[in-house]
Image (tube, rainbow, N blue to C red; front, side):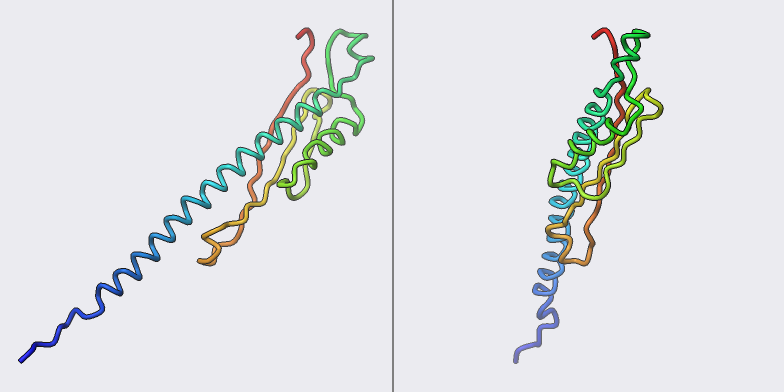
Amino acid sequence: MRRPHRDRGTVALFTTIFAMFVLILAGLLVDGGLTIHARQRAADIAEQAARAAADTIDVAYLRRTGKARILASSAPCRRARLLASKYPEVSGPIQCDTAGGESARVIVQIHVKFQLLSAFGFSDMTMSSSASAHPQEGI
């Protein structure tokens, strides 16, 4: 006479739960890496745009005083936005401020679309980064 096994199906249940945890961990690794990369990419683009804005100096003021300052017009921010908009991964508005000619500050956003975590109901993310640059004379 055989005795009934009470632990039937526990291996299948364990395997199912374990596989789901492995997929979630893989999603955290893959999508976490994507968000870190997006943050670094946003910082890189913001730095380039801020340098482009800070490079638009007021030449007449420089000749008169010997000190560099950013143009008071909208040209520096227009230049920064033009440079940052050339990158297809940039999403949202590109914010720029020239702070009275002393420095240029640019904020860039990049939208991250999750690859694995979207299957578990996690939404996409937007990573942003800012950078500042100021003109220098005598370099």
